[in-house]
Length: 225
Image (cartoon, rainbow, N blue to C red; front, side, top):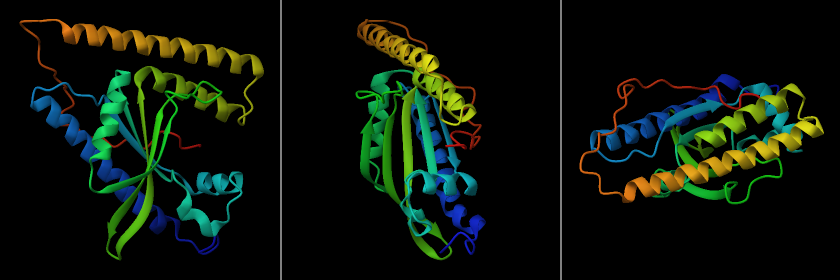
């Protein structure tokens, strides 16, 4: 396989199958929680498959040959957002219990954020995509983060793209401080949730989601990464 002979549409379809499937599976899990009257940890699910241009750029950036293309961990990615920090790890436990993936790499950027201030839980897993040519093993990346982490990450990512990964130093410092503030917010909201959960409330409105029966696949995140 090389850059001149690769059929990109055929190659990427394997990842599209995996991403489509996991978005649907996770949306179904969200629906099960809600219909069962349980506290649902999943706020939203989205997925994307990298473009050929983005894949080639990453291979060059990682100093990898084109033959190593299957070794890239994030050609297919699924992002899960939630309200609270503890729900990040609850979703992680759900993924660990699955029989259709084999998790082989975990990076906790929540406990150990990147120097930039980036926070998220990253998981890479082996998955066998079912195709007409049989099973094809691929890597799939899961990112789990709170809404506050997602807001910060989305803005930081757009700035990295705008400035060709060279964000001005004063903006970098302000982003680091904004990350700290966002994390403090997450911690406080998690404490509020824990306190509310401990209260003996006689009547509590069940969780409801108008989008229960609307499964929309969103392939927008990190297209430029």
